[in-house]
Amino acid sequence: MPVDASGAGDTLDGAFAARLIEGASPMEAARYAAVAASLTTTGHGAVRPIPHRTEVFRHLTDAEDELSRGKAHA
Image (tube, rainbow, N blue to C red; front, side, top):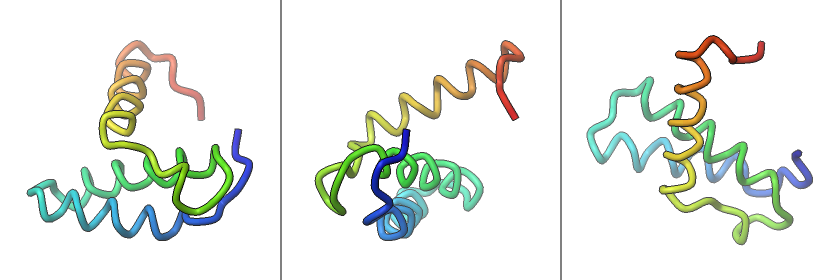
């Protein structure tokens, strides 16, 4: 549940740029960045809740698993 949007935009920008630099496609980078930014909103403050990349990848994998099983919610 989101509690504070502080830093979400900066997280989105930084995560997107980082993934592009690592060689991800723009679509892959955008998906990663959106998840990172959304996770940032679950904590208070602009820096402390920024997720580690392993957490972002875990959430991406979980979402892909749900999609493949037909359990995604619109």
